[in-house]
Amino acid sequence: MKLAILKERRPGEARVAATPETVKKLKGLGLDILVESGAGARARVSDTDYEAAGAVVTPDTGQMLGEADIVFSVRGPGEAEIAKMKTGAVLACMLAPYTEKDTIARLAAQGVTAFAMEFIPRISRAQAMDVLSSQANLAGYKAVIDAAATFGRAMPMMMTAAGTIAPARVFIMGVGVAGLQAIATARRLGAIVSATDVRPATKEQVESLGATFVAVIDEEFKQAETAAGYAKPMSAEYQAKQAALIAETIKKQDIVITTALIPGRKAPVLVSEEMVKTMKSGSVIVDLAAEQGGNCPLTKADEVIEVHGVTIMGYTNLAARLAVDTSSLYSRNLFNFAGLIVDKKTGALNLDWNDEIVKGAGLTRDGEIVHPALKA
Image (cartoon, rainbow, N blue to C red; front, side, top):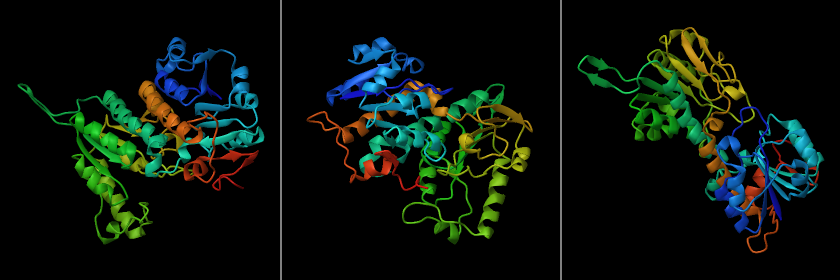
């Protein structure tokens, strides 16, 4: 069987779906690996590196896709690439299923069996395939690095003969994978860090990293999480108290990093324009939800702007700004997924649709859209 690695064509996308390391591992599964010329250039992987790992590098995208039984990419392929894929081919990539419905429809019409890596179930058996975690981890790190580079002061406390420089104050809003890494990174840089989240269980995680947890902690908050780990809706009274606390906290911050995303929905507003107006001149906001409308209504996607004396950074693909490392992790996620769908003894495709990982990530099959979340 042949597995093809596509070159990414979207503006700003520097990642690649395979590295020389994973090419060797994929060949170990009995697969022949085809790599489109230049696929790894922006992730600092040359065509020669791929050839040394045992891949065949080709400039002919059409022939490569026409021969490929499996196709790996970072983002969903374009219309021209989909049209070149053969019926029955398997595609695995990040497909943004809730927003890129035309792409999903085209894949179904082409007879491609498509898997969205974002839909990999978050179960222990699938942790090594979890692209959301692997990419968000480095995005959280990069958010702090970008903020520190833009912020016009030092991050740690510095005591000198000329006087003492106070440490920067960093506030993380949303304590998922990206938020936790942002906390850890800001702490390593010497900042005073605080964080907030609507889930009570995150309080211990925040404090274990040496940060201060910010929330109105009453009986309602203590019961604000379901058995499955999701936040429960809060009363209007609680929301008002929490909003007042957050507004007061933001006034004192130098850097605010927001990370709240809800799949398939517009990002919730966490930092209002009124809050931005209260921030100190020279402060920085990094909005990791910019692609879904932003946690701040002032955020502009893929722009760095200054409003009311505050710099607001709205990069929509922070992971691609660390393409070498994010590609390394993402390609390992894909290799682990390949190990699930390829028979290790025969090297043949073996899709078990009763497997909860295969079923959970599968979007299209036999010319139809099959995922329940996407059916009309």
